[in-house]
Length: 371
Image (cartoon, rainbow, N blue to C red; front, side):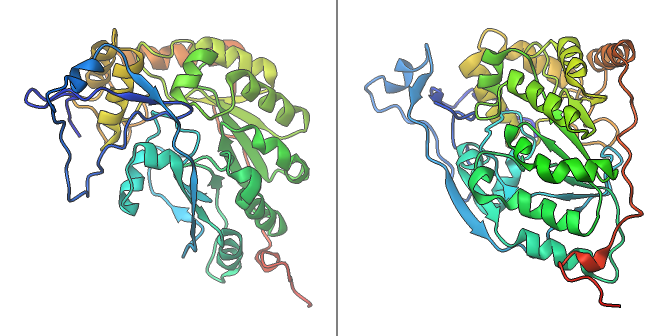
């Protein structure tokens, strides 16, 4: 999706910062029947906001209940190191402005902007549905990842505990799985994860985009702080849970401390590492550009120019093999930096192995076999 933040014939609408939120607007989604344009009412209200963004009260979070028809999603992408995933939530309160999943809210009739981080769809029956799917005669165990699209440990999980219910089902069935998160809530479930790790049934990955706390508050306003995430890595490692770090996404001229993040995570106990570069599919491209204008207007054009350099001149290229890493000089240099840092710090490049042989489908529903 190629887009300009302010097309030549469109009046400028000042972005508005919302405390504790990542997006600066509720951008219309691609299926919207109605479009809205800026209108100058003669009182210079448009011009008044051009010098600096205005801050407003944060929109409240709304939980929307959903009865899901399936708990396990499949993928056939060669870019992703797992076959199946489980996501207890749609939308994510962490509000990461770079989140590639934002455009999925369009399928629900919501905006990928503020709606994505304030209208959280919770799959209230996901544990029961998962148990049925694991117990199905045709089901074959494979690598399942929890939280691959939206964070399974976002703030609403503290109360709803849908992720904990999913882990309970997987534990009963002795089904291996991995988790990826930016939330400290994973520590709550160490009582479940520790014994599973001792049996080779679980691995965890923690995403740390930057060690700069001020930058992190702008990029991912409701995620745990970088230092708190390092403590999570340490807690997992000390409990015997194999843990890796994701230094993603890499954003040109925004977060440039990849080596420092890798070193800090390694010292905390991470043994694996991976990264991706910024992806801007669909509505995410204009949303991210709005964010740039609000927080980094001095380098917005430079950032987008470099993004397009590694995407063949476009905001985004969805081609397999390149969408995660990009192409061109900057992408190559980034790959070299990552590889050299991992070699120096002693990271293992292969994913954490998990044991599929222990799977017991009859125990998924909590009943097991009598004979």
